[in-house]
Image 1 (cartoon, rainbow, N blue to C red):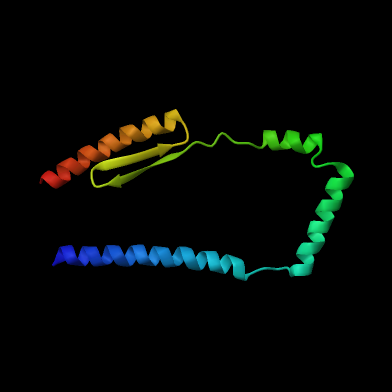
Image 2 (image 1 turned 120 degrees about the vertical axis):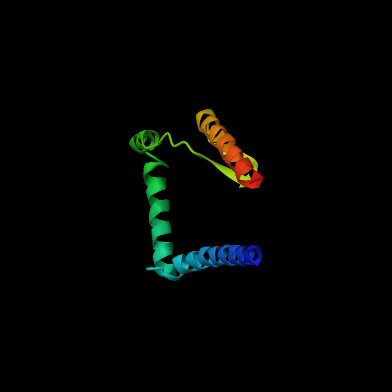
Amino acid sequence: MIGALLIIIGFVLVFTGFLLIVFAGLQKNWHRDYDEHDVYRRYQQEYHDKRKYGSESNMEQKNNRENRSDLRGGGIIMIGPIPIIFGSDYQSAKILIMLAIILMIIALFIFMI
């Protein structure tokens, strides 16, 4: 009885999350502050500026290099006791492997009881 209830709750949560993602994307596109003519004017202005001054100045290229961040990250997807690990660099992946081993041991103890 409780197992069936947990399965139903899981399906409802996944479906609700899917709907929230879809409606958030739609809502973002509903609130536009400009019309088609404004977009065309901005495009023409950018095109004119690039032709007049070149594609990017040296200062803009320098600022683009300085604004880069060394963002690192990763994640673990646990399918039962089996982990799927992904990371942007070796250090993140190494930490996630240790976390995955701990999670696998915890899952082993939970399901053995």
